[in-house]
Length: 181
Image (cartoon, rainbow, N blue to C red; front, top):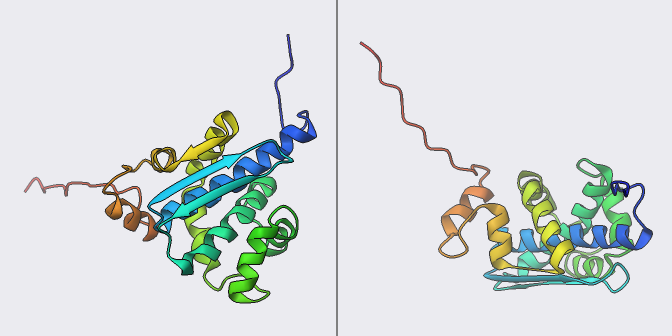
């Protein structure tokens, strides 16, 4: 009988692939949440890297999507919302392309609206983990996988995305109680 795999006993290559899956999953989820109309994420082994393409995304949102990957990777490692220095450590490491995009847009600082992405990812963290699981298992995730993880339809979903963005997702409709009088 084999031992159960844990983070402590997996190989460095398996660990790198897990980090990569979390990183790309966050890019993908952030892309959908910020308005991309088509998203495709893929990973290879831990050494070959990964890529996420967000189509239909406003140019102003691209640095925010870039920030999402290193932020989520740092959060996953820390087990809680990461400190900014932890995010920058990831940006200086595997997130060099992400860092370059952020710095070229905003200078040598975090995007002024990164707090928005952090709140969105905190709120939808289970979806980020779910997309990372899809990536880890199949090496790719598409728009419909991400929408399924967010529990929203993959078409005609503007209302759902607005509800998530406003912090009112999931929407719960309750009926008022009528008094017994």
